[in-house]
Amino acid sequence: MTEQTDRKLIATGIVGTVIAALCCFTPVLVVFLGTLGLSAWLGWLDYVLLPALAFFGALTVYAVWRRQRRQTTRTDG
Image 1 (cartoon, rainbow, N blue to C red):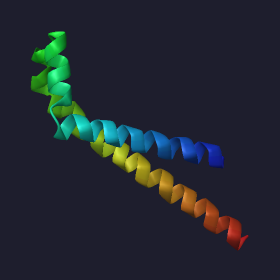
Image 2: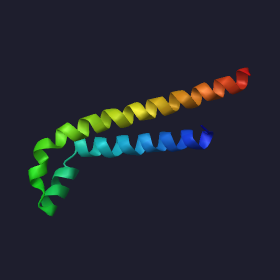
Image 3: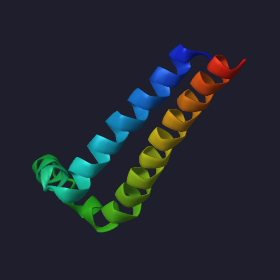
């Protein structure tokens, strides 16, 4: 895995976390689904958004940890 991959993982994790957080903590998704006529999906929305928030947060932490580990092995070796 390269540094480019680490950057992509970090970017994906941050963007996913921000989007999931916006949808969880603001009525953005409720308004959007309501305008599309898909408000029936709001019942199971928490079952999807909260695990997505946890997944993307964990992905960000993993990518940062891996990047730091790679940098410390470069300086040691």
